[in-house]
Amino acid sequence: AYEINVAGSRYVAAAAAVLGARLVHLSTDVVFCGSCKGSGAYVERDRPCPITDYGGSKADAEWAVRDAHPDALVVRTSLIYGGPQPSKHEVAAVTPGNVFYTDEIRNPVKLRDLARALLELAALDVGGILHVAGADAVSRHEFAELIARRTLPGAPAPDDRPKNCALSSARAQAMIRTRLRGVREVL
Image 1 (cartoon, rainbow, N blue to C red):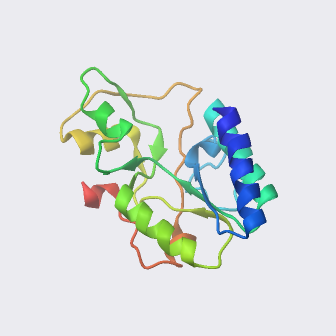
Image 2: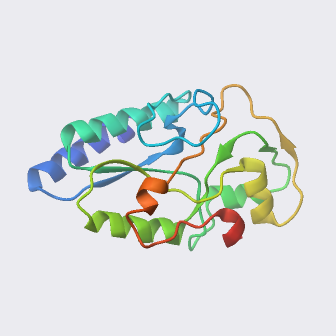
């Protein structure tokens, strides 16, 4: 995954830069460890501090994209749900026997809201990093219960998992008409 996430992203960004093409690169909230912030949501100026291999590869990909295509827009998002096919998060929520983390906080975003926001942002003259995620910061446990519409088993996350990776999307929301709804409203 590292080669795809970093080298692949660099190649795409370099090609887009040569062509003068607009590039919107998608990243993730797990570029953060979830414990170095303290309270509150991460904002764009917060320095990535990943603790997983995936988060590390995505943080390196952000750097590679911005190095190869300085005008690119890097969008960090969170758990995506609500597409034409159930996401892995939705499937997990209805699969018997799964336990969900009560202290791993994320901002799930409905696919349609994310897609509409990305289309609006692609049309704007904006580069750098933006957070585009749902309005509600919820635990993986609460998210799963909202999907399943029933009580599910919960437990604290192991130490090697990012904890509070809540993202503030206030900056992006001020630029677009699409409302980034919270998962509680949607579900």
